[in-house]
Length: 224
Ligand SMILES: [Zn+2]
Image (cartoon, rainbow, N blue to C red; front, top):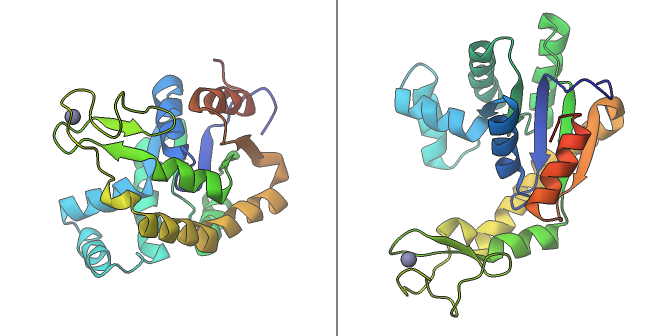
């Protein structure tokens, strides 16, 4: 990736709690990157119930990981739909085996990711961020006990209802998601950092979201 030309294809990485998905959404909205999110592709496939959807539903229901070749087939289809435009991967490649698949696309079809953007945050900081999230069960308003706290204790500003944690934000679930990231995706980040240093960019994910966004724009040579 040249210093001056924004990358056409970007893959963004970051722990659960790093804010990488909000960052990806903002880059997409402001700079015309089509968002290819593995999680969303899997849910879509299930809704469509097409040839890829039925096996995916089975894996998701049983709690098993969806095999890399199935994920790759869904991603390949989404990439084809985007065509020549700017594209941003959120959640791909997630494993070293998916890295192998992306390498093969580069060799065989000349499909190249120009920038690997890592939103770096320590485990403790990510856990603190996720652990602070609260939601109002009555109206759905969201809060964060550190960055966006309610006015009174842990009650909703709008209707006074006692705030709750999302099921996804239970401490055990948060721990488990950090472990999955460390076991599967951290090696992917290390791989690109070592083997593609010219295409690898790291931003400080512990800063406030606006600062992370500004740093990412500079890393990608995009205008603010
Ligand atoms: Zn409320």
